[in-house]
Image (cartoon, rainbow, N blue to C red; front, side, top):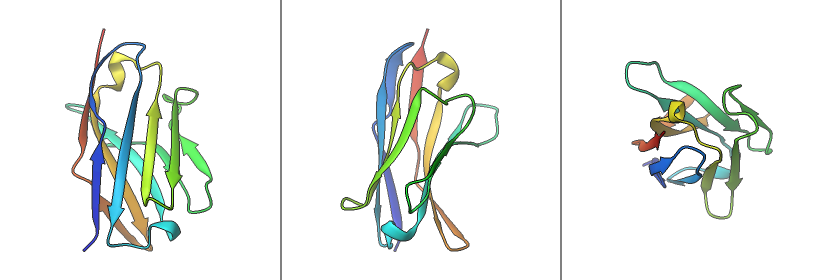
Length: 115
């Protein structure tokens, strides 16, 4: 059974940093593309960052230069380092894994940025 478990969310002041982690089990992590999405209240879920199995990355324009996605294949873990956080980054952040044509999601972790 594939499981994605996120951690690292919390409350932080504007300008602060957080690092989210997502541990994957039950899958061949190393061959899968991984991503972070977020959903703010009343808004659609949106892509934040993605990393391929080869390490190529892409980011939403709103987070470029502030967020960094990375992966540790030895630990089956993907990270999202978030710096210079803004109140508009407040959302539930979800880990996503693409295995072939199948998508898997974590349960989400809340990130709240106060002004």
